[in-house]
Picture 1: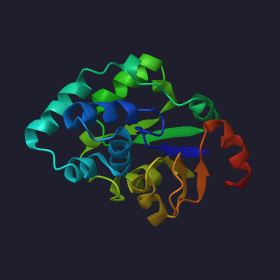
Picture 2: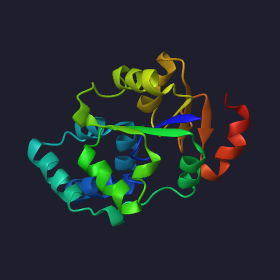
Picture 3: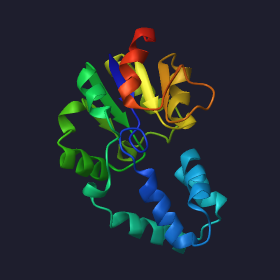
Picture 4: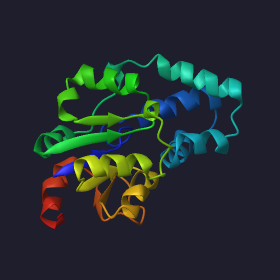
Amino acid sequence: MNILWDFDGTLFDTYPIYTNSFKQILGNIPEKVIYQQLKISYTHAVNYFQLTEEQTKRIKEIENEVTPEDIRPFPDVEKVLQFANLNVIMTHNTRKEVENILTHYQWGHYFKEIVTIDNGFPRKPHPASYKYLHQKYDLDLIIGDRELDILAGKKLNIKTCLFQNNQAGADYYLSHYKDFFQLMQYIK
């Protein structure tokens, strides 16, 4: 099985860190509201809360203080990575951010290719990066935590799975990676 992974909120539980950085700037906005907006997209949250350029810059500064030790992988996701024949990542993060975290956990060897914002592809849900990875690796499944992570896969007729998100549109849904192997009986 060849799997394309999203990074934030799919492989690693980064949303608590992003929520905290927004909370430090927004103050009295409940964390649940911030989290909900971030789960749509980072850009959506910036626009939703009408953040100024200065506020956005400060949020990035706060996030830059986070170390790889602060970012945890989801339980049992490594078992799925080990199971797959091939794993690739498509993320809007920078290559440096992704590689720092993967190096910390010694996970770099799990991924045949990592496509980041640095590669110059249009942002998700544009299908260009997915098409590139699919043509190169014949993907069987896309796993992401937001609708925008799976839309391109739907256009390319690749099976999709939403993680910790029950929004309509995915072929499969997972709340915990320990359930992945039960899901396998339905895939392909």
